[in-house]
Length: 288
Image (cartoon, rainbow, N blue to C red; front, side):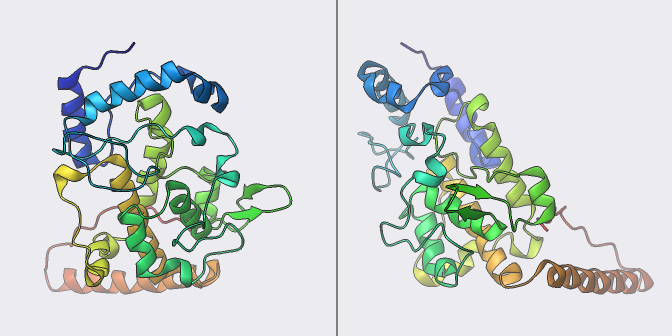
């Protein structure tokens, strides 16, 4: 039914491992606007797509997980490219999808809790021991989105102002549909990149040292997929949030930022006075 250009796909995957996304073309999903039931009842369509996806995944190896985190692969020689996850086609999946049914501690209600932000939780995110919606839900709560049980919807009632202006509706940071064509995945990729840019330089590489005591030594480049990469980036942001933002009001955070800016300005003035070279700093777009 569809054709896949393998050289282009492989090249895109290699580039994606560097730039944290995959841009190769899976089958065109112009049917995404159709209902979930249409996908579920069209066995031929699903079977054809599965065959196409497995043709690509045969180039890579499998690293275990449940059926919400991995797709089957018979040739253990590279990472899995996950199959489209049909339940996410439901527009209300963000409020009706399953969360908190396993070992991962998460609730839609209220703000983030200490229990939801432990290192054990971060480990579960990077090892795919929770589903994509659970990861998104935790990040949404930390950004200030709140679940309105009466209206069964997410609202930006406590979202950091700069983020709220750009994302009044909580974005999908993971790509829960698992369809990585540009027209489907671009919004998820862009929102994930925005999240990453908000992490200060001193926290950019905090994930591995934080989780090493729990036995996690990181990913190998050859094993990366968009899902794994974005999960790791979300976990890294959550660690930054827990250490720097959790428990503070907007006013307190602004005061912390002011004091930090003053300290950096004083240090820069001292460097100039001593004739030292200016220190380069990566750009950071804060969420508050």
